[in-house]
Image (cartoon, rainbow over all chains, first blue to last red; front, side, top):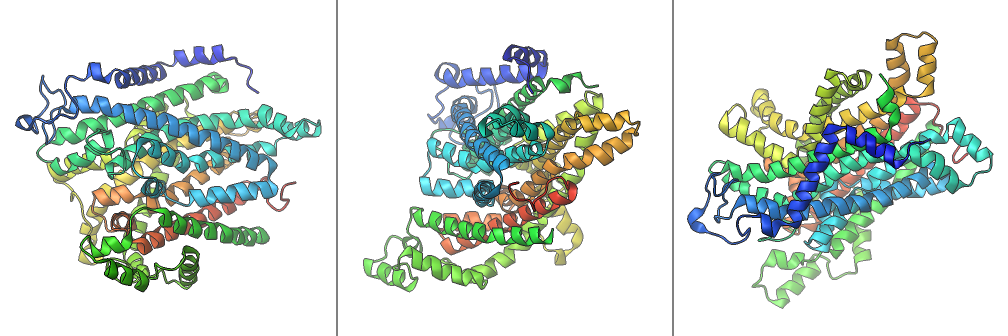
Length: 283
Length: 318
């Protein structure tokens, strides 16, 4: 189905300016996370009560919090947690979910029933509530946030992939591939997986948004990495009590989450368009 | 068809059992002793032991699971550790607020998102498409707790147009009631509008590129008929799944928005209960919300057969 090599896909991706912008932002954020100790103008943890709750200034571009800590420096350090959690948890969810969805949709019968009923059990728990429950059992840490968020989003991938597999299962070319004696794995790989891939890629971009927001949500509820280590979510949690006196405190960490998620979505869209050449030729 | 519906409903029984077991076991492994939480640190070992026995916590977990399940089947979710009131009563009290919020948000999201998605797809690469696509992208990129905070900052505190938080019963005046609903519904709906519009657009584009659409066009059928009769129906299949999933998530997933806006629903109830180690309440809420999601999924599956008769369930695995 897909006759375009990866060079072709890359060329299409580069033509999409917004997608490239997203990639540049994520690259910059990643670099910022890696080189945080050199980039942050202040110590993200050391408090300085004399400078508490200061509005943005040349010395503190994002202002300071109730302990006089530099919010700009804290936002930079917090990106380390968010980016890690986003990438790893989506990886966990996608690999597990796509495999399960393909197998369920293609084989049908009791295999489908068992897989999808287990997915139904997982899916039946509201995402944030399930993540909270898993975190309550595992205890608060970055690794546990990744595991919790990863598990939560497996069923979404399984259902979307199964939907696509189900749709092509009834198509003539899959029936003929099967009739021609192609093995199940061969048919899945050549005919079913490519058809599901676009949906999965769109879903990955969406899920990355979920995952980073979910991490922030857990931190926002006090279940992420513990203070004083800053995360975007936990900064918002403390900022809530100072919304009138220090609105900047709530604005900048949230803006960081928004920019990250927005950029990831731009990349996701760019990838989708690059992978779907039919879309670019249609008027 | 009716055989399928009955079988699909029967299939939910093991799922619901699985959920109840998962809920019970998960809580069982949660560190933290509810007895210690109730009595505090000064309690003597004797007191602790007595209360443990009174609460039935000295029995093995599978016995307690069996007893709990037997009660649940009869609508009895046990008593709250915190205030001794029936869990069922606590949930019934909080449920309407959550359902109202979730249904209003999903309704608003669906009504906005479907037209946005379809129009974007039909006019791909037009200015309208770029505008709608950007709006949708904005929606899914906005974390709802930050959006909630911004809404409160701007419309509640700065402009003072709407109440910053809280809940007012309908009895106290429909106008005030609805005013309190606006900000939380907006906060909850924004993400779903974006996600659903994007999903509708991409599945619509996918369908529009397929051979049968070209055939329909080649036959000389009008654009309107091709788009609404042929394409939309097929594009609706994956979209329906997403609408169902979203509503399910909203029913229990409004945890954060409920908390930020002090909305007295079951999301808020469950977070409070988790913090207080009030296990019977946590189990009751989570089980109930999970069951609701399962039934919504069944409805979605059943509606598949109506939207696309080509997906036949009666032949099993073929």
